[in-house]
Length: 332
Image (cartoon, rainbow, N blue to C red; front, side):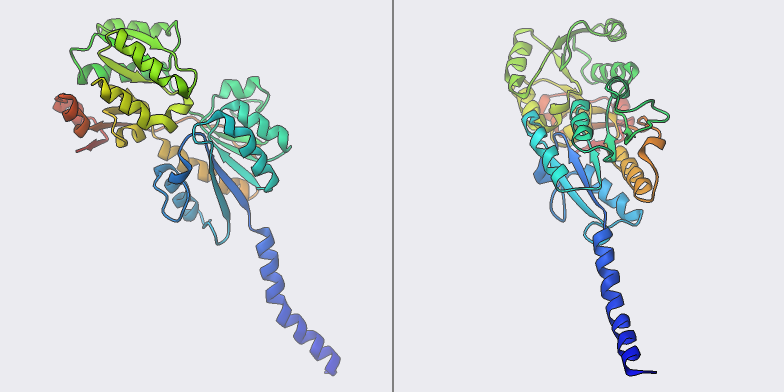
């Protein structure tokens, strides 16, 4: 073998691994997991405290994607502040992420699609009817564009179930405030309330700044218990809501376990940890070549009931054993 050919061949052998590593580094996908109101401090760092980001990261690892190794996962939150969305979305667009997994109002999702055409977006909680109205998807079964994911729409039956559980826990309750609702209430809710001998009063909260006034109104109306609705910014202000209720010694039903884990009395609603796991499965499919528009938008399939006995004791409530037996988790 000629010396030149040998040197050239040796150079190719020596540089090949470095070239492959460089190619691999350039091809490492970058995605963003964006929350509407989970505090950013709870989703960042090597050991995040949020059960939602933990479930997402764990499922990604189970599917073969480890943050910092073969994928880069940015974690962001609007921290329950509507004024943060524009800057947050623009920052993600500039950082050239390959995919966004987002929990956000549909209007924010629309801004993201307008800012970068064709950017794959996986939703974790959205109203499918609004998605269609805004032109973000063609249908639920076949979205057809770059947006897919999971809805968080709860049925009227689920809301009725919350009232029933609240009544069982607080049998003397007669007047219940529906925090975050506007008048008129849906007829099935009114009917369910009558069947339980309850009067449900809607208490609108258009912005976080209105929480104090809402609870002041609840005091004036001599409310016995509160059903806290699913207004999107409630999650980020959950501790404030729980504190305001505790000051008035009010039992409350919430829509998510994270409220009960934060000191709320009870929660019954969608298993959002399950939604995070399913969102990771969407990401895996898209990274492996699936088109978002070919992946059907799916509904929640798991629900959970949590009870906090510490809070019950502080309120002077005795939770019936029959109710505790039906709970997925009892916090003692």
